[in-house]
Length: 352
Image 1: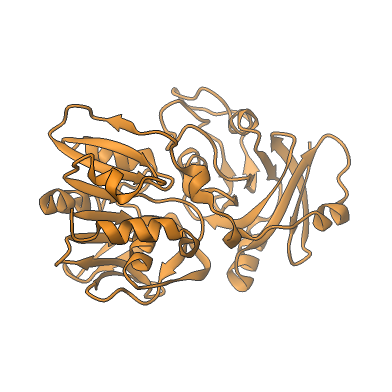
Image 2: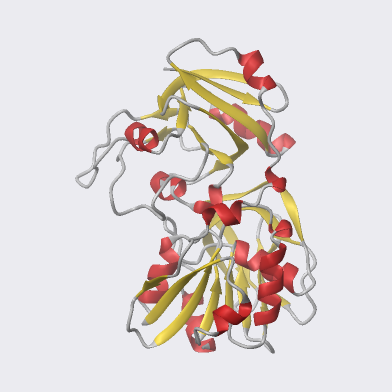
């Protein structure tokens, strides 16, 4: 197939199409992980985005039935330097191209991804449109159809579960996990620590959540601009101080808004499994998995900063000891990535 990637600034990139024959638009972002492309593709936090992998060959170990972080692909499109037509691994059940095709997601390969990453680093993330077709693609007309504003769309409501789901049924500790676009790795970490996890729709009110009598509340990761999810701000503010709360990624950002802080958009975000953070309380460095385009600016009154990004000094964690609230910007469950920060789940257990 033919493939064309058109960027909002007028840049046109032609390559080889794979996956679905389709046309999709979204915010173009890049991930620096050397592996874990299946986990990245199934991460709900990529909703509304076109994902570029910086590692030069993708798909060499195929895809399988166990490594997904959700039940479908969330990015609108997939951009790689080279894709492997076959997956060479004992657990592989399909190729990366077949996996994309099953989810109606187009992919483009055979292009200089380094050029695109430099552009994003210099100019910032931007809207893009990706088309794949067996026929000729008119780049000019493709660019004319590009009309996308990432921050105007509520992606949380698209990603969240529509009904309550229970994992680890019968376990002693009861956790209410508000699903803004949760990765299943978070659920697994909680279940492994003896928790019954109720994954809740993001639309539930604070009274409905409290009626479940949870021992602790987890605010999940998810896609989109944290500033526009005002219903979540209200719900979280009403829950504060009643039950221990642990916020992860988007959950961390929503906590800031809920208690009077704010967030801002990073130029090109943090996405990958090799991001260094400094734990200010322990004075230790951890290598973390991250996937976010926004960061906390002013922290709320009563909170203290617990972790910072080593590269750009952005806020990576905060705590309110009086209200039993802990939050981090990165992914302590990893999936994929280093396990340096899984101790945070143990800290949450001690808070409970």
